[in-house]
Length: 169
Image (cartoon, rainbow, N blue to C red; front, side):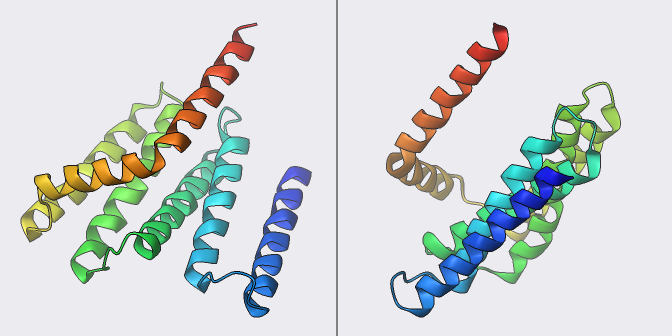
């Protein structure tokens, strides 16, 4: 419980500092960008502390906070306009991924895998039915994003390799 208090303290310090810097004009972040960073930070922290400790609710909530933070970040930074047709798929896909995280934490419990897969499939089906999915645009956007952020993926892969190397010892 003490670790959650320190995470919340750091999160509140981040939010307070960001708002003060925004108020005095040192940074030009919108409130939704600050919220997206806060949700990503809290989500990662919650997932990290919950995974492997049989803490299903914090893992589920942390995954949802992280994914909502990513959604806000993408909407703020990549000129993607939020359309009402994307609300239902988002409400299906985000919990679907959270259920898959629960399955990752406890692979013997297959109901999370089934629920997560069904929710994601239903979300993708709604996107396809609404006509919002264009494979060519998807690959072009994926290429553009990966060309901008390949360094972050490389650092993350290196960190994962180091962590797995240290766990084998």
